[in-house]
Image (tube, rainbow, N blue to C red):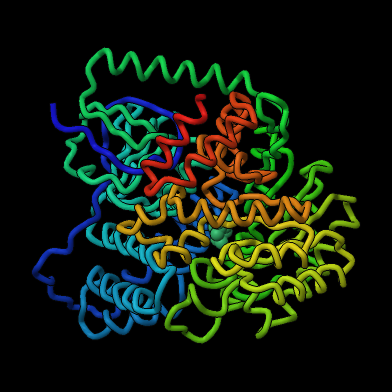
Length: 552
Ligand code: PEP
Ligand code: MG
C-alpha cells in the first residue's frame, strides 16, 4: 500500500470511492501547421472563443447563484472584443488558430499575473478558456470533469470555477486537489455544494485513476487503497455524521443554551432558498459585489433596490447583514476599476474606493434603504476593508444619514483588530473577515496555494486578533460576528464561541455541522478550547489542544 496523502481539509464530511482525474488540457504540437487562408483561420479562432463563451453561459444558466455569477464573468472574458481583436491580429499574421488563441490569452495572463494579488483566481479562468478553445480547435474533447459512469473522487491540480460550478454532488463523492488554499474557489464552491474536499495535497496527481481513496474533508487525510476495515470505519463515520446532523436543529446554541447565531453567506437571490433550507437564522454576509461581477456599468439604484428587496423578502423577516461593495483586488468590478496598481490587495479596494467614487456608496445605501422600507426587513449594513476608527465613524454616519439604523464594519485588517476597542465605539457591530485578516496578518496572498499553511485559520496569531476583537465587542456590549471561512470549521466554531463571538456566518451546507458541534459542548467547554488554542504555537498544536480541551 502506498503512503497516505495529507492536505488541508476545507469542506467537512468523509467519502470513499475510486479516483478519476479531471480531463487533461490539450497540448499544442511542437510543429505549427502551415496556414493557407489567414482570414478563415482568424474566423475559426474567434468562433472557438465564442463557442467557449456560450458553453460557459449555458453552464451559468444551469447553475445559478454565486457559482453562476463566476461563470458569467468567465464567459465575458472569453468573448471580450479586445481579445478577439488580438487573436485576429495573430491569425492574420499567419499563426494557426489554436496557436493564435493560446498566445493571445497567454499575453493577457502575463499582464494579470504581473499586476499583483488577486491573480491566481483570474489566471485560472484564463487557463480554462485557453484549454477549452484550443481543444475545440484541435478537435480534441473539452477538458473538464470526467464521466466514468459511477460515483468517483475527483482529483485535479486545481479546479477552475467552470469545473466546480457544475459538479454533481451525487456523482462526485469528494474532491482532492494538489494546489489551492483554504479560501480558493475550489474550497468555497465545494463547501457551497456540500462535497467533502481536501486542497493543497501533495502527491494527488500521482494517484492512478481507479485507485480507491478514503477522503476525510475535516482532517485533510486521504487514505490510498483503504483496508476493508478502514472502509467500514469510514462508512460508520458517515452514518454517525448523518445522524448527528439530523439531530441538531433550530437556532445555534451550546449544550447549556448559550446562543451563537448561525447565519448564511449569500451572493445573490439564488442562494436564499439554500439558506432557508439550512435553517439559517439570517444572512451574516451578503456579498453585494457578487451581484455585479459581470457588469460593465454600474447598475441603477432602481435595479439594486429590486434585487435587494428580493433577497430581503426571501429571508422572511430574518436579519440580513449587507456588505457594501467590496470591489478591487480579488473581486474586480469593471465599473469600479482603477488604474493598474502595483499591489491591488493593498490599494484602493473596498471602502477605500469611496474616496474616489463616492456616488457608488450613496447609490447603494439609498437602494438598500428603499428595499428595507419596501420589505420591513431587519437590515444591518457593514463596510469592507476598514483600518482605523475614523473610517468606521465616517461610514456609520453615511449609513445612518440614509436612514439605515444599524451600521457596522468588517475587521479584515490587522490594524482594525488591534484597534477594535476604538472601532466598536463608532459602530453598532463588527464582523471579522478571517479570509482577508489572514491574508494581511501573514502577508500571504489568499489565492496562493503554496502559502496555504500560513492561511490556516487555526494560526494562533490569527486567533489572538480574533480574541482581541471579541473582547472589545463584549466590553462595549456590541455583537461580534465571524463571516470568513473560519466560521465553517466545526471545531474552530467551538473555539470562536469560546472567544466570545456572538454569531457565525458561512455557506449554508456548513451550518448543520457547526450547529451540531456547538450543541455538543457547554459554554465552559468552548471557553476551555479557546484558551487552549490561544496559547498554542502552531495550527496543528492549536487543533489538538482545542480538541482535547473541548472534550473535557
Ligand atoms: C473575508 O475576507 O473573510 C470575507 C468574509 O470577505 P471576502 O472573502 O468576500 O473578501
Ligand atoms: Mg474580505
